[in-house]
Length: 135
Image 1 (tube, one colour):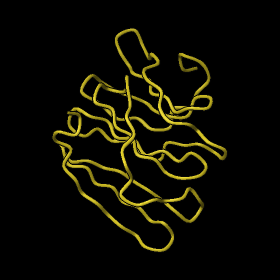
Image 2 (image 1 turned 90 degrees about the vertical axis):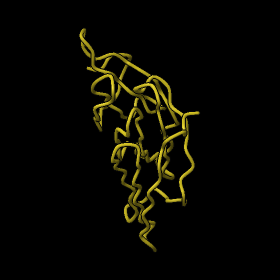
Image 3 (image 1 turned 60 degrees about the vertical axis):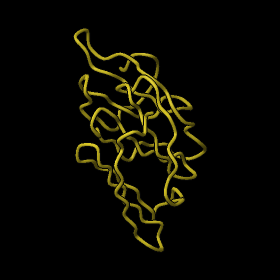
């Protein structure tokens, strides 16, 4: 059982301070950090929405974490600059509904972020540097 109430760890990435898991927890998304005393609840973000909420992607990008969520209606993009303690919404380059025929994925290479999306009409990819995004 995860600390801080019911939740499901769906993705894990290694941040600067160690492993961070993210997933739905009640009506929000949550992050849990692993430390010397085990897992602890870190920050929460977003709203889980009306359908089946999920975290479909998580990557460590330099000192940051970037998560892609699906809230039952659409996909969202989130960034944490403090290993999951706090999260800020980022604008998706294009809207992608959350349906069975759509997908969004995220990966990183250092401070470069790669976002790939398929809205069931056109697949797209974006690459962007994250330097300065937390300023």
